[in-house]
Length: 545
Ligand SMILES: *[C@@H]1O[C@H](CO)[C@@H](O)[C@H](O)[C@H]1NC(C)=O
Image 1 (cartoon, rainbow, N blue to C red):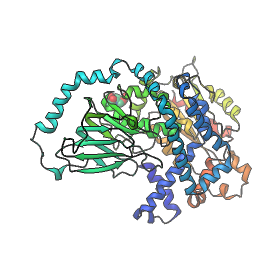
Image 2 (cartoon, rainbow, N blue to C red):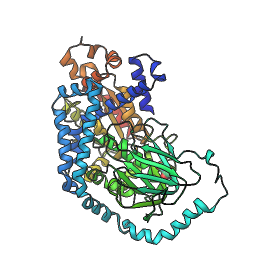
Image 3 (cartoon, helix red, strand yellow):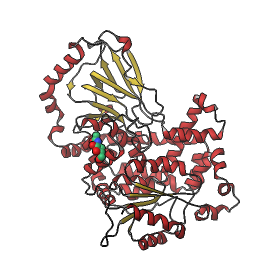
Image 4 (cartoon, rainbow, N blue to C red):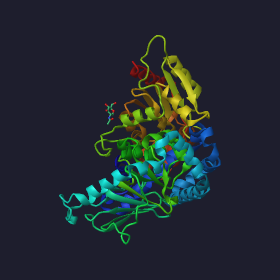
């Protein structure tokens, strides 16, 4: 948990370096800070996201009122300005409440969406073809399934059939960020307000867990499911199967901080790839807190992850779905990346494999950036933000990049659809932007392309590295970082050179994380010193040779 560790270090600096280690309260604080940081780092991106990434595609227009209402709230919250930000991040309690409200809002949306869910699912099913008709599929495969269960669960008797004590628990709740349960054998999923996932196994001790099947289990407002193991397949112990599918299933939760572009990938799409890609589409997703408009935005990804109908587990009344293998929960150890040495993908997938998977999902043409020739100028995408961390001299930056030899496009206009936008991103060789969620788009660059992250003033290098620097390298991108000096920051103009925010960022980090969020992330724009910046542009060009 690199991010946790780095935040921990920051947290530790604030108080005593050893106290957190021995204290769960310390850990709670750490988690609080992580949460605060994430929320704030990217919350200011919502307006950006609305313009650049959501773009009101026709495909989601059915539910347009739902997401746009949500974004407008965030937008408004953001444009309520710095005062609002200050309020949010000065006190932890307030942050917590903000999250609660956000979650509540999502739950309310959920009700509105529910009426549209059937309609929403249909286009996805159409796109996925005939095999999505699970009833027919199940009928055909049911005998095989029965055989397999009887054999694996009751037929063998050669292993530690009676050795309950040696059976490892089906749920691993030891990791701070997410829980995972693996129900292998006779697994039964019963939907409802509190879904229940039951493993029937004479080998497993009778146990029960409450699991929030989300990649950040510590967030407010998540729903829990019940996971239990029972010894007997009879009606007293276990729900009786009404439908069987002879492929694995995975229970995941949406919500959390999704809707923020970086969190979409970090909290859901990458963890989903880690947990489910190994099944090659032969897996059914059972979803808690299903957000149909959100799934629809990423339908090309979901359709590659699973060829089966996505089940809204909370609405799945009167059905008991049985599977030979069921995984509850998902997550990744690091932020916005895959570490194959600690993230269990089953087959050793890397972040390069994830980006290949995305290119496959979106049928993107470019695997590699251009090699520079006399005839073609490499294409640079400059991401412009609409709120904090804006370029104050964007035309100069564009001119400098063009002078060096790039063909420059400034992104920030609404696109016809997300799929089209993704295709456009893939056409670039270099992406350049100030630290923020927009840089998430680098997942669609060709392998070997260049990412330039401009890090605002205020000792934000660790955040920049964790959120984008390390992930970019893991994706096989060439990564360049440019740190904004005090005299390139709007904060110097606003506060003067003697203000503690300018004079001593380290002290600010150690004493008041809220101020880091408020000032360095929330109230800063950048005026890039072109002379100082030009070598970065040259380096980006050289990386393409
Ligand atoms: C992951 O990507 C690498 C590089 O493209 C490739 O060689 C490897 O086969 C991929 N791994 C899997 C499991 O597909």
